[in-house]
Length: 155
Image (tube, rainbow, N blue to C red; front, side, top):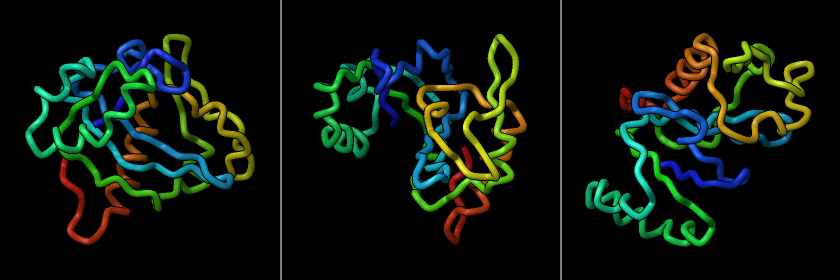
């Protein structure tokens, strides 16, 4: 599950054009490095109020743990099959960081504020952006290669 809403601090996946079948790569910027936390293949986007009925019982219990998010303006929940496990130790190598590319109707652009393979500022990561196909493939390979012994579930 991933959560979205109407505010810049919790952006809307629907407004960003996310559709079932898309892959979402949550990231974290920390100490001049970019960490890719995992991947979620979107099966459905449901209103937060309906998420409980859309989830298996085991996952519904997890949703209850996240109930305080509702007071933080969560309005939507992305639901998908199990993806790569959530991890905090997968660092995007400097070379990939320098060529990480977003795509939009206006064209392609590199990730901003990257110097010598280091992330100087994280402002260009705040929000929901569509990765260029090559960048998405490289992140996917990175996640799957760094998966713990036994491998990650396929998405």
